[in-house]
Image (cartoon, rainbow, N blue to C red; front, side, top):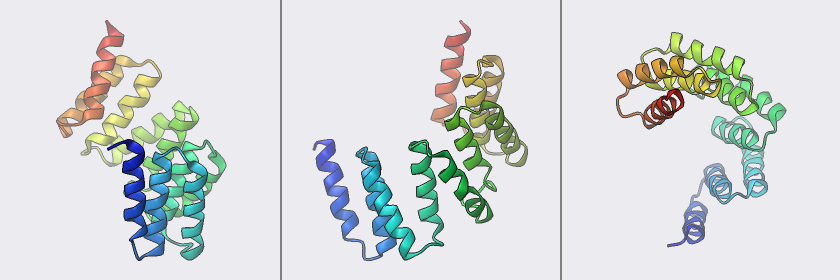
Length: 171
């Protein structure tokens, strides 16, 4: 099955959903994967008109706005998403994603450090710190962060990939 055929099949499945908001979200995800951001945005705007307070719609809009580099629109969603704790990290994970996408590595590192302090038991917190350290060329620090991530979650593909990339960069 070709990727296009698979996407058409997923769109057909999404169309079967009787919940108009869930259907619009599913369709928008398909359109994003098909690299049709305008269609994805139309679906999400339609869902937002139906239920303006739906945090799943806001999360999908945030993701799309980051992808489209519409920083102001993504940032405008942060207060509501943070209040709702949509990322399960008091908004810090979303702020990290936005900062990384913008290339604001100082802010991203601050958010990642906050995550490692408030959620140190999760490997993802340490992987995120490793990613920003790696991006800024602090490979030794990134190695330590990735090793911490692997201690928390030994099957973390992101941590393993980052660790390998850092070892290559150091040699």
